Amino acid sequence: MHLISSKDDLLFAVQTVQRAVSSKSPLPILSGIKFETADDLLIVTATDLEIGIKCSVKASIIEKGAAVLPAKYISELIRKLPDVPISFQSDPLTESVIIKYGESETNINGFPVEEFPEVALPSRDTGFDIQENIFREAIRQVIFAVGTDENRPLFTGAMLELKNGQMQMVATDTHRLAWRKVNADNCGIIDISVLIPGKTLNELSKIIGRPEKSVQVTITENQVLFATENISFISRLINGKFPPFHQVIPQELLSKVRLKTKELLEATERAALLTTEGSSVIKLDLKDKISVISASTVAGRVYEEISAYYEGEPIKVAFNAQYLSELLRVIGNEEIEIEFAGPLSPGIFRPVGEEDYFSLLLPVRVKEE
Image 1: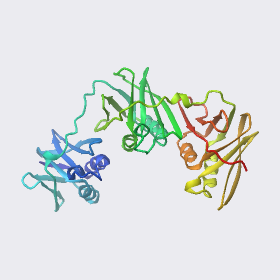
Image 2: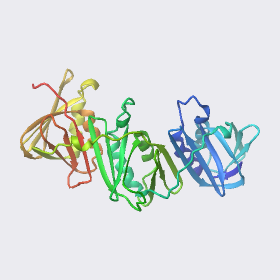
Image 3: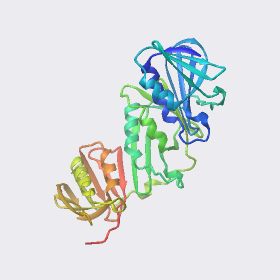
Image 4: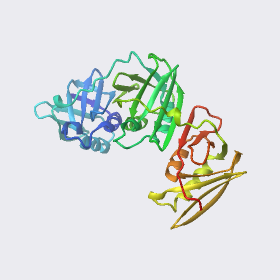
């Protein structure tokens, strides 16, 4: 293999696929990044066997071939190289690659190319399209509710459901839940529902987001492929069926309050300063035109009042401060509406005037003072 490419293109490709490099695998080959030529392109690939990422960039191909280099060294080297054309030339006998830049060069020892797992991509005949920035925002608004307990795998991912040309995403860790709906384009599949690992969505959100571009989503029996112009991101799906989340949404609501999102978030974060990790609880006293946020611990006491528009019965409720803060940070609206069926039922949080997003947060039982 012998090619010449720019530093910017090489760095973009390596940093993109590096998100799939395995850091804990007993297989040394999974700590590598594969470089291979195709026509006038360089295709860079990494995988941890759970996810795989391919990224293609322009290159002048002098000799076709492939090489696998340690991600740790090649990514740092490219990042520190001068902004000049960079040459990659592999030696198939030693599996090393000579990297030339200006009058200088570095030789990096690689891995046997034949040991690198194949990252096969499914046909894109069936799927749907969605704008990158809209998809990233949808991920951002649900990912915080994904669980981390590997003993409960169904809660470590988000459900993606396509129905009647609309995509829904739902995630829950059983303490909180987030739901988002957006329109899908060019639907080539029938209605479908799958579970996508939270790690997949988190890493995907870091490499998409352009408002003028779309990502194509292809779903197979056990995999999902996200494809843009030059990036292919494939992931396994979680086996199983997402719990019937509609059953936990309160129907008979007794109280509703509307507040400024920023004011509630800032008051929550100030109140949380005196809480500890094991008892990160704040109380909300909702009544009339005032909402009271308070926290009382051995470290001290916080009491804040913020203006609110209130309907229904007065209510006192306690929430985990960290969970409430994370929810408020992604609400995406200046005002938030919270509805309650009672002090021990989940609070329903919605951006004011929007019907395509809501989140639930279970209250915390506390002793009356």
